[in-house]
Length: 457
Image 1 (cartoon, helix red, strand yellow):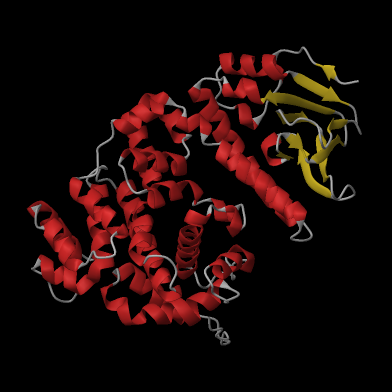
Image 2 (spheres, rainbow, N blue to C red; image 1 turned 90 degrees about the horizontal axis):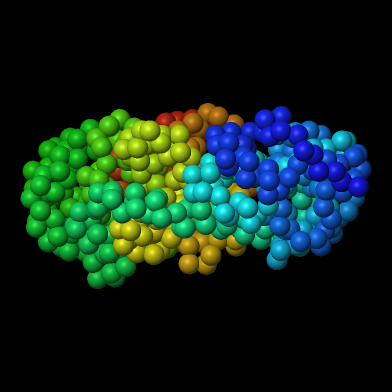
C-alpha cells in the first residue's frame, strides 16, 4: 500500500522547485502530497486517469508502452520529472510506470497547478521544459519503428506543447506589459501586409517609403554600410530598391521598423543581425525549392526572434523582476506581441511552432504553418552548418523529414547546401549581406572532398 509522507517541505529538494516561493511550495505539497513506493510497485498503469505528474525526489522508475510491455521506453531517476502530458492521450495514461527501487515522488495535481499564481506557473513551466524536451528525445530513440507508438508519442507531445501556452494566454499582467511596449511604425505594418498581396511590387515599396523621409535615410545608411559591403555608394532610394529587389527591401524596411521599437544595444543588434541572416536564407530556400512565398518567408525570418528581443526588453524595464522575466518562453511571447501588433496570422501564429521541429515530425505541425516552419527550420540548420563546415556532419534525421516535406529528395544537409542551395543563390550573391557571402565562400572551401551525388526533384 502506498504511504503519504508528512515530512516538512524543506526536506525535499528538486530542480523543478527552484525559484518558487514558500507559499507556492506549500500549495503544491498540500494539493498533491509526497508519495512513497516500494521497489516493483506501480506508480501508475496504462488506462488510469492521467491527472497527475510526478517529481522524483529519491529512487528511479521505468515506463513501458502499453503496446510493447517488455520494452523500457523511459528511464527516470532522482531529479527527473514524470510528465503526465507526455505519457497520456485523451486523459488516460498510455504507459505503465514501475518503481525499480524505493521511490519518493511529489504528485503534481493538474488542478492545483492551474490555480497557482501567474509567476509561479511560469517558473515551474520554465523549470520543467528542459526535462520534458529531453524525455521526448529519449522516447524517440527508444522507438523501434514508425508505427502507432510513434504517432501516439507525437500526439502526446503536441498536446503538451499546446498546453504550455495556457499560463501565458491567461496572464493579464503579461498582456498589459506587451500592450505597453512600443508599437511598430505604420509603414512596417503596411509593408508586412504586402506579403499577402500578389500585386505588390517595388513601386509599392517606393511609394510607402517616400512618405517617411527618415525611413529612406535609414535604409540608405544600411545599404551603404559594411553589412552589404557594396563597392559603389547608393545615393538614391529607388536605385537601392531596384538593386536589392522586392524581397530584400521588404526585409530592410521591416527590420528598420523592429529596430525602432528596441534599444540600440549590442545584444539587440546581435539578435537583429541573426534574424536578417535567417530571413535571407528563408527567402533563398523558398526560391530554390519553390516552397511557399519567398516574401512571406522573408518576413517570418525577420520576425521569428522578436520574442527574444521582447524578453530582453522586459528584463531591462523590470529589473526587480529580472528572474521572472528571464523565465518567459520567447516563442509564445513573440506570438502574443505580433498579435498585439496585428501582424497577419500566417506570421504571428507560426512563431509558436518554430521550436517544434526538434521535437515532433512534420505532420504534427498544423497544415497552415507546416511548409513555412519547415523552411524556417531548414534555414536555421543551414546557417549553423555554414558557420562550421569543418565540424562532423549533423544527424541526417534532423533535416531529412523536413526536406522531404518540401519535396526535396536530398538525404543530408551537406548535400542540400553544396549541390542545391549554394549554387542556386550564387547568381544573386553580390547583393546578399557580406557576412552571408563570407559564410558561403568558406563553406565551399571546406566542402567534403568526395563529390555528393545530385538528386533532382
